[in-house]
Each structure stands twice: as structure tokens, then as C-alpha cells.
Length: 117
Image (cartoon, rainbow, N blue to C red; front, side, top):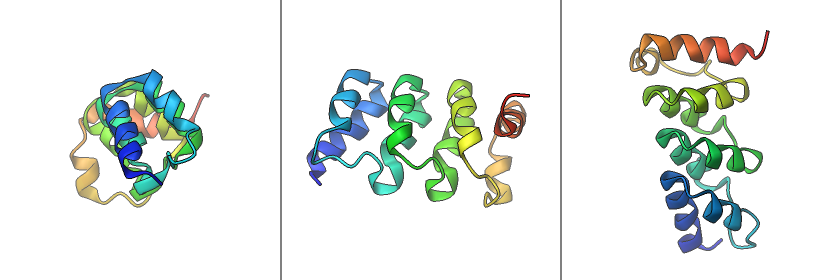
């Protein structure tokens, strides 16, 4: 694993640079799911849905108690919440994590986790 390239992947996810993310996904020295799927967490935190969708097949949305979902919800990134909730697990979230979320985001996490009706 090349740490400089890993950092470049995380930075590109943070910035929403889909071209760089896509280019690094198949690089032999990059592990997209490394460091508890940090690149996915960065994309979710910033609401970069395109990068998030690119990273999902290579990442673990349940890593670190579904931190990517929590960050998306905490920072009101509704499109990312909708993408992550059905793949995540909130059963381990302590009360404070729920309390940090705006009421509409709490509701979205719960309804999106159920998937399409």
C-alpha cells in the first residue's frame, strides 16, 4: 500500500474529484477500503455523492459503526444518507450520535434504512 496514493484518494474524495478517485480505484498500490474506509467517510462527510458511489463497491459502509452514514447525516448530506443507510448498521450508535443529528436527518436515516417501499 502506497500511503501517498492513499492520501491522494482521501483528498480526492473530500474534494469530490471523481476523475482522480476513479483513476486510483484500480491502482495496484491503493486499497480503497483501507483505514476503516476513510475515503468513503470523506466523501460522505462532504456530500460528494459521485465519489461515494464510486467508492461503495470497494469500501465497507459499516466500518467504525457506520461512520460514513453518521457523518453524512450529521452534515445534512441527504443524498449520501439515502445511498448509505440501506447498507449501514446504526444498532451500535450510542445516544449521543443520534442526538447530534437534526430531527429531519434522524428520520431520513431510519426511513432510508428500510429501503424502497
